[in-house]
Image 1 (spheres, rainbow, N blue to C red):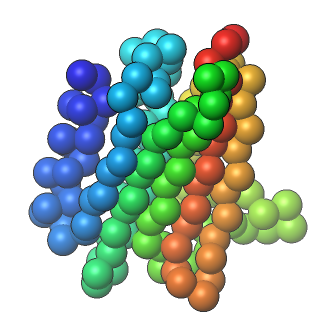
Image 2: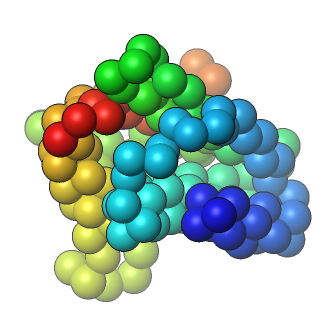
Length: 142
């Protein structure tokens, strides 16, 4: 129910901006996550994706949550993104919002959830297709 509420809010914002939202979330995939972790993970990922699609014609967000096996779940998100969001020698994600020192906590919250559930993540930018990819694997057992 909580994830449905988060997605409903995002879907409304997508309608306002003309961004296409496609979701494929399999039943009982995230039933092991706490409500706090569901909020931290999906709200931050989807809010960042919405920010990346701003002012892009034909923009989209695709979110998939599927079981990997009985012990893990895979969360995949692909979204439109105008330019490579990684900066600097160490290729870090830096907030593009006003007052960046007050932002950037969202991805730290995502990383905290990934660590808590003994997971892994891969984030990368595909310059040829102007897309940002997020792949997260979470273990069902902490």
